[in-house]
Length: 126
Image (cartoon, rainbow, N blue to C red):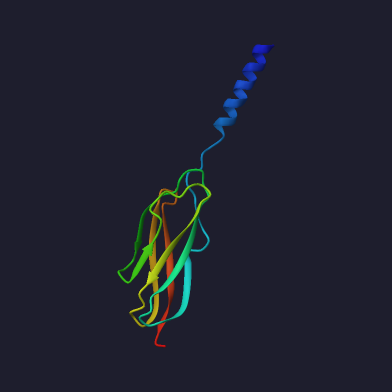
């Protein structure tokens, strides 16, 4: 009887662990597009994008690349731990008049891998 109980307990434990699948890192963005509205010519403007690691393993930003030299991005270089929230800041130099739409490609170690952040608005004379 004791052997049967031990066997059942062991099999139950194995079944429980067999169905516990690790999620890995999961990127959860509060927003991926920011409209800055009208901004003054030659006055740089910035947008902040919040990213939370909603997974169970560290999230790593392997590459953060703006689409052109008129935009720069500031981001954490260290792994983002599960449950941790960080900020990525994208800044546009506002040297060209008119409407703009700039993107920042964020490559991670998540299943989706690449995310696109959008910074848009209109540069005007003030």
